[in-house]
Image (cartoon, rainbow, N blue to C red; front, side, top):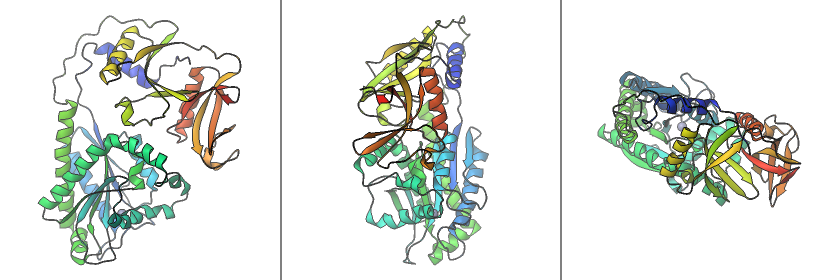
Length: 434
Ligand SMILES: [Zn+2]
């Protein structure tokens, strides 16, 4: 594989290295992004309340929480999934969070139960250990899917398929601790405010499932219960609940800042003499070879971001970084080793080198037990799709490129179509190289 293009991210990180050589660990004050998701909306009114329905209560509370945070924190960016009474599909909410690189995602909801005497708040994190008494809640909150146009999107995730469960747990293990921490803080603050808490719980919520950030779903209380429904619909109730969520955020943010070293003094040093790139070469750090394909947020990647995965035969190679500067190459290698990949090494690529003979790179963007034909809407407009049967599964590939550069560009296009986990595979003609 051969690479040249220095993408924007690398360009800026190179710039950073040049400007702050010797100072790469001091952190600048960074923006923290919180995404606040008012549940339901538009044609989906959520739970019916004794005074007001869920979609309206949660919109008011979400906007208030956001305003309180904006007022108090200059270094926090607040993003709302909706600010008006509109219908949003569940995946759109996660996609807003991911696009904005959320540090925390809060989805706000209200509960209801067949039993009018049920009351109290509860905060959920994603988890596979479903308790029987939580199923009613997840079913109700996931039911909005039935109002959505593209329901198949969610069926890809089968909670009874062990492989799906493992992939899911790998993805979420990275955020599970922080999600639970924030959930506990929220419930604690509700209790301090005199509310009744039913605790922190786990369940499968599609609105949380695709988030690459700590995420919680808050059920403020049961709005079909006369007392709680009246309280949560009142301006006093909304204010107090919003204040409580702010207080939980206060603690969480403080802990986050102390962990990320914000508050340390930043000493800016003079830039070193500008270094020239090594001509015709690109360096990457190869840090892992595995038979398993890990998702971008998998614990196995130990927090490395922007990792490139290349499949050859039945193994996956994992690369970090991309530079043509010798000094940055060495910094990258050190960084990867510090992350715990002791055997990491520099992989050197010759720019624009073409593959031999019939060899080519293709982008694997979909794996399914379903057989789709050309132009299936599942392909999101990708043309010339190659389908390969592998056991009970079908693998779908797009593109055919001779240089790794071109493959990277095609990969980017495929990812932009929504296939976030697409990756590059080396082929000989139309056969995967074994
Ligand atoms: Zn809801």
